[in-house]
Length: 537
Image (cartoon, rainbow, N blue to C red; front, top):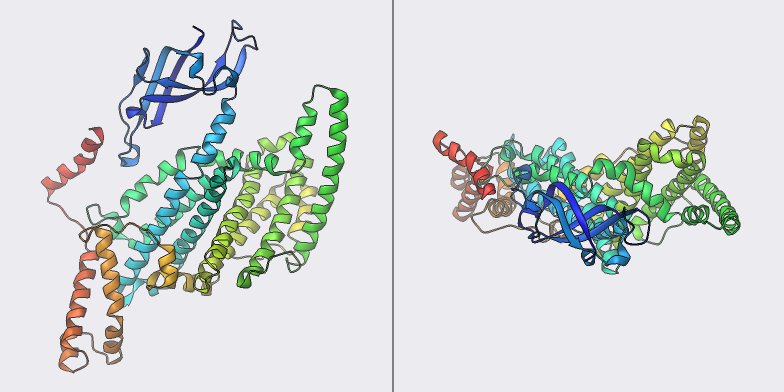
């Protein structure tokens, strides 16, 4: 029987400890030319049952104290029939395409969904906590330092779910957007890190002290998992997003590469010449478009009629033209050297990624009926995104290896320098306010967040939030009369007995929410050992 002898040692494999069959990618060699082709066939993907002789499944890992199954495995002289190759004999050496296709779907669903859910969860819990937790007789959500974090949480939650929806729409249509999935995995998990860090900061000690009342710490510990798995973010940003995306999305570059690789020199020259002149014409149009839109500030850039969001579409058209021109110039002047300029490639990828993420936010705005209540969230996304785009462009220009070209890029795409400074204070305050009061915009942002049973921490927080908002008019009446004690207010006839009970119920709910867990020393010793014991079982 014709087959393959495999040797491998895999260090961390999701579901490895419980898998009954492994999907293994490897470099296939055929030194005896049994398949009738070259010796080095290339990356191949095959299915390997774990009960085959030579397969060893290792013990479980504990990734960031999370209890999902993960662990090592290895194989020594494992024999599999050639039919175990995915696609059979005809698909040997085509594993890279299979891996990219699989990742295109998986990376566009799993981690972006996790990140969007984390964003919505952080928006709900942090907004509610900032509303019920008071300092100096004011909810901490009224302080502008807290509002800045709340706005960033709310804006990123809106952006993440918009980008997730846009990507899933493409996947639902049968597309396999490898570059877009890379963009989304990278930036969704990075924004999840920002969101959870902000949520931790606003909660303060509440999120630091471990115990059943803590609903944030587990997410905080798990963040590095999302950053690392399915393609580490550093690698994805430096090499994948722009490196793959530019070639795939350019209208002529891929055809030029194919023409250069054609073995028929006469045909290759003719095809390359034809495509090259089209590329030159395209580059000239791109240069003119970028120049006009940048110098005019995007005022005359094309945009659909989208109500209050029309101005954002114009700026998207402006930055898209600038990115296309900048990319063409980078290819023209650096050629293959661009692959080794990882910082430059990463910044170009950042612009491309930001344009895609903002497109998701705009699509969400459209899909949800252009809700005016959501406009502060869209404003935050677009103002923040445009500032990031201009920062990336400024860094590209400042560090472009061919300095005269960098000066020329400044003239074409940033003639006035950086003009965008991120969300205004007004936008921050309006976006933060959405999380502090029950409203339709808040409901859309935190839709489907898991609350749990009535005795679970998030359910208690949600109930305290509801009671705090409900009793706010009573507090306002007492504040106007300069009375803080409920019994005194009752005696003065300012509130009713029923309202006093409402206040007491709200105070008790808030006290329960802001409390943290404590343990006796002997109990603490058992609890710190329990997670390791449970994970090892």
